[in-house]
Image (cartoon, rainbow, N blue to C red; front, side):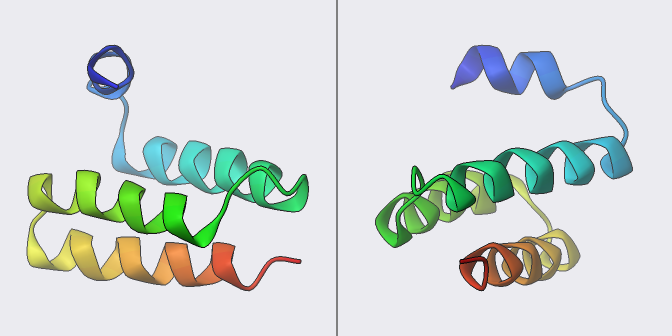
Length: 68
């Protein structure tokens, strides 16, 4: 996980969001991303975010949850 964080540290917020949405949506469509994994992801990322970013993360995760 740390190597991924380092890899993405130079990306703009827009690029991070786009990559996050793309990867998570692909995994969700293939059935490779469970609710438990989404919660774990949120719990891992959220402490590093400010309140505005946490709200954005929650909205993104809700979009992913709605993918069938």
